[in-house]
Every structure is written in C-alpha cells, then in structure tokens.
Length: 130
Image (cartoon, rainbow, N blue to C red; front, side, top):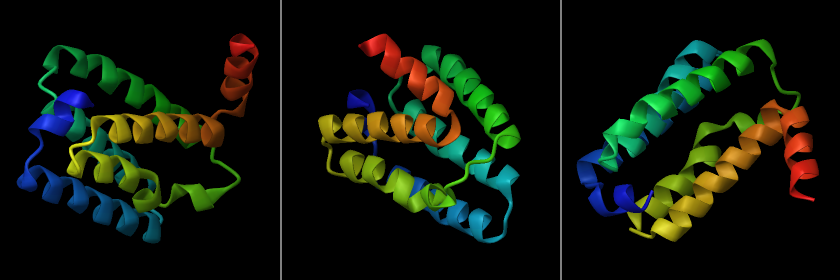
C-alpha cells in the first residue's frame, strides 16, 4: 500500500472509481460473476500500481481462492456487499496519499471479508491471537 499511495495518478483513480461504479451495477443486476471479476480488477490495479509485480501471482491466487469459496457460501448479511461502502475507504486513503490510512482500510476490508464470508476462520484467528 505505501508504494501504491506514492505511485497512483488521477487516471488510476478514475479507473478505480469506474470499477466501483461497475461493481455497484453488478450488485443491482444480481451478477455475482461480474462483481467478482471487478473486485479482482480493483484490487489488482491497486497492487499493480505498487510496482511489486513479483507478488501479483500470490495475491491473484489468494483472491481466486477467496472468490471460489464465496460463490459456494453466500453470506446472510448482504448489506456489507455494497462495493462502494467496502472499498471507498481504501480509495480515499490512497487518493490522499496517506499510506497508513489506506493500509488500515485494507486491513479492515480483509477483516470484514473474513467476518462476512468465513466466520469459522474468524473464530480460528481469534483463538490463535489469545
């Protein structure tokens, strides 16, 4: 995130905002496949801007596994699925060039995703941290 916060330009922000708008449309159209694709594009675009291309395959694999899991395990609370709500804090931190704020937003996004999609993983993480 610190690398991305330094390297993103206005054209990158326009692209990321476009992904958010398209994700909202995918939710409205009840198109989970498009939502999944756009979510990956959003996160990969942020990651790609960091310049750490050697780590992209790892992130891609993690996201693919997470998305494969989520398709088979829909959440009960779909209010948390509004893409702009979930991703706007990340974009805001990056736009401000505040890498700490953006990193915290990514951290919270990951925790919210785990809470929503995998309560058993969340429980295991809590037990491990005690």
